[in-house]
Image: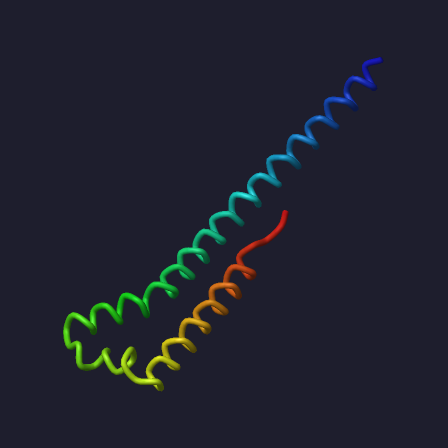
Length: 97
């Protein structure tokens, strides 16, 4: 009977060790994906922030983007590019465990 009890203890120890290892890996993965999410957010907001700064510093530089057809096409293409970049970064970051 004591051999069976000892085997159960060893088995429980291995299971608990495996659970701890998996939790450790999951925590490390969450840390790395949080860093990627922050990088993606910064990259998404940077063009908008710079556009606002340029608008307040010198409106003449930024107004052609919104008043000409070529400027509007550039704005639309940049928004589409930003969206694709956001989706691409999100796809890279989302890891199923």
